[in-house]
Length: 360
Ligand SMILES: Cc1ncc(COP(=O)(O)O)c(C=O)c1O
Image (cartoon, rainbow, N blue to C red; front, side):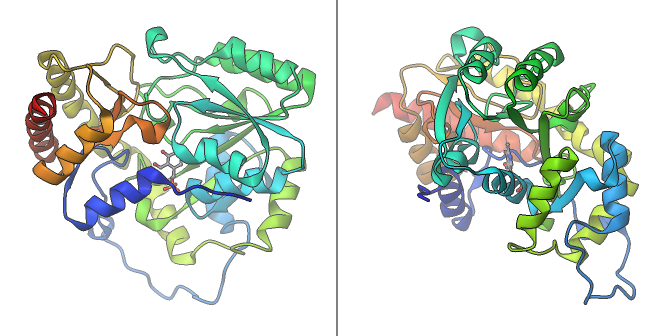
């Protein structure tokens, strides 16, 4: 195994410590414990359910239209993604990964020792999912693919008919497709989960994004029974179970899903036109792809993304995500799920940083 540093996380951590305004984040303005208006009563702290607290698993199973046994609760989508890749690993198998991509989605398979085939998304094509390319790689023998819908960092959606084509190829060639759907609920009229398209799909997600509860580290994986057996066996040797306090709060969150979704979407819907206007009015940036979620991946005009990121952070105390951390220099990730005042402050600073970087 050989894992390089997770560059985006190190970058964020470094500037968070300095108290910078984060307009890179793919989180939504954080939910506060006090907003639940609830207390833990006599929760039994000695109990840990290896595959998830039964009623939470049941709730998740209902959300996906699967049986309870087809859901396993994990320590965030991060553990779910790592766990799946680890549990399936066999020397010589190939994993298709996308570029650009949220770093772990490319680096986990590579780091574990899979053969890696890279599938590009091109800005010139609106960062459209490369369905033909994926199908071709499956035909050529790739055993697994790792995709993200909607896609991080571009926000672009994979249409359902493309998922169907991919799943047909997977069925025909005995392959599986791991779909990270952590941002699905942030979309207007979210499409059905990939798990409803085919049991060749493995789905991961968490309460980090739309529920704004990344600190609880609560996610899950949904898969067919044969795969789930492999995931469960490995689980017994890794984290054993998720924090029971987090599971309890996740249940509270699902009790209020509609209200929490509305809260999150109110930030996103208020902020999207502000970002669109900023992009429109600034000659040094552009974004012609269609983001269906609360971040985008604008192109810089002749500006180095890393240099821009350094000036924004160090001179203007504002964090963006340099494109090279997602595999594509010359772009940057801009998030807009935070409170509007913070976003506006961040955008103003980014305008100043762009002026500086062109002057250097
Ligand atoms: C695509 C994607 N998957 C997984 C994660 C990690 O999520 P979690 O906080 O649930 O571990 C993130 C975090 O930004 C992400 O963007």
